[in-house]
Picture: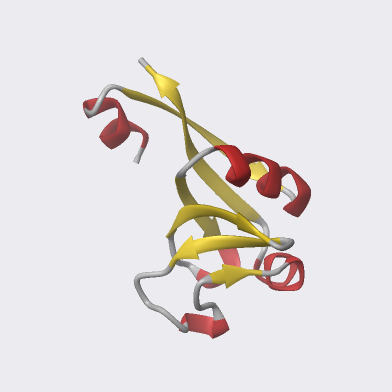
Length: 88
């Protein structure tokens, strides 16, 4: 995913995060989120009212539709983000 972003002139960061750090990053950046317990990647859309807003290509998979709550995050963790940090 990092190499794919680079092909479009974007730099990306890969990081294991807790919920509060993920919330802060997702409020400012887009990219991908992968809770290890789901074995699944989703796109980061942002945050809303204390939850992470995601684009889930398998909407409803493991009970995750358009958002990930703190409880879901902790249940399916650890969680990895790959997010766009800026331009190369």
